[in-house]
Image (cartoon, rainbow, N blue to C red):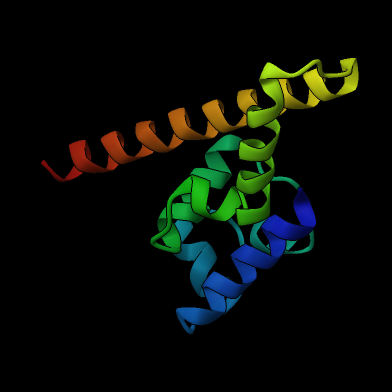
Length: 117
């Protein structure tokens, strides 16, 4: 996951015209932490939320790529068939991750709205 997340974070930061120091300041994390994320280290949940907010993105948009979503839909369609044990595990893992990211995104949106109310 880290390479794709790193690329999405870097691309989003560059699109805003920010350097790592500026982006890290917006996120409330150290520049070295931001750099580690862009280098492929998986962030904590708090860091992921802070990075998403600093970039004006949702957690889901920077952490779950289009191909992952497409794979989830593809695997879900196969659910009615006889799946192998590994396919069932992959399906469960993808569903769990997507559910988790959607809950985190909803929480962050609620927190962000509540902070401005």
